[in-house]
Image (cartoon, rainbow, N blue to C red):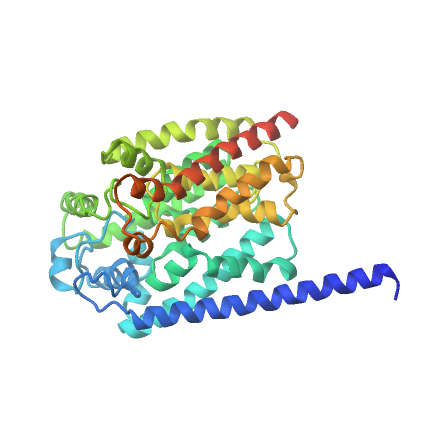
Length: 424
C-alpha cells in the first residue's frame, strides 16, 4: 500500500469515527432530554419553576390547540378559566392553533410523545436543509450537524420544554434556502416562521431586501390566509373587535411578567434587551420595532446592493447568514431561538459554500466562534446564575454575552457582505 492509499484509509477511518461519535451524541442527547422531561414533567396547571418538562408544549401548543378546536379563544379569559393553564397565550399567530389541532385532539400523554417524536424528525429536517444548502456531503456532515443541534443549549432546551422552536427554525431555513429555486416551498417556510411575529417581521424585510419577490409574496399570502381562516373560526365565539382586545390584553400580561422584562431576562439575546438592560429600562413594543428597523437598515442595504450575487442566495451563504442572524438579533428572541446561528456555522465549517471562499480566515473564524457562543454558553442560565449568586452589574455582563456575541457576528457579516458585493 502506497502513501496515498494509507492517507485515504486513515481519512476513511476518521470519518467513520466521527459518524459513530455523532450518532452516540444524538442518541444520548435525545434520551437524556426525554429522561429530564419525564423526571421534571410539568403538571398541567399553575406555573412550577422546578417542574418545567414539556411545560411550553402544554401551554404553547397543546391546550391552545385543544381550546381552539373547542371554539374557545386561547387569548381570552374563558381559556384560563376552562383549561389548566396559568395565563392566556401570548401574541402568536392564530394559525399556530389551527396547524396543531390534530395534536390537541389527542390525550395529553400521547400528544407529548407524538410531539417529541416529531421534534426528532424536525432536527433531522433542519440538519438536512443546512447541509444540503451548503453543498456539503450529506454522508459526511448530516449526523455531525444533527449532533450539534441536539447538544446545543437551544436544542436541549427545546427537547426538554417542548416549545415549537424547531418549527420556527425550519421555517426560516426553508424560506431562505429555497427562495430562488422553489418559491412555494420557501413560502411554506415563511408561513411556519409567521407563527411567531418576531420571526416573520424581520424575515420578510430581509427577504425583500434580497429581492426574493416570488417567495416573499407567496409566504405573505399563505401566512395571511392561514391566520384569517383561524381567526374566522374564533370569531364564532366573539367579534373581531373582542378578539383583538383579548390579544392585546394577553400580550400585556406577558409583557409585564417579571421574568420577561429586559432588565431581568437571562435568556433573551436581541438588541432591545441589551439596550434595556444597560439603560435600566424596558422598551415598549414600538421602541423595539424602531430598534429593529435601525439595526436592519445596513444589512438591508447591503443585501439589496448584492441581490444578484451568489453571496446572497440560499441559507448558509454570506447573505443567508446575514439574514438569519439579523432575524435573531433584531427583536425579541430567546436562547432557544439561537438555532438560527447554525447558518454561518455550517456555511463556514463545511468549506463547501462557495460564497465564503473569497472571505479571509481572519473574518470567517471570528464569525464562526461568535455564532457558537449563544449555542453553547452555559453561564446565562438560571441554574448557573442562582448557584453562583450572580447579581447587579455582573448579572448584566453575564446575561449580555449571548446578545453581544451575535451583535458582533452581525457586524462582521456586514463586512463580509460588503466585500462580496465589491468583488461581484
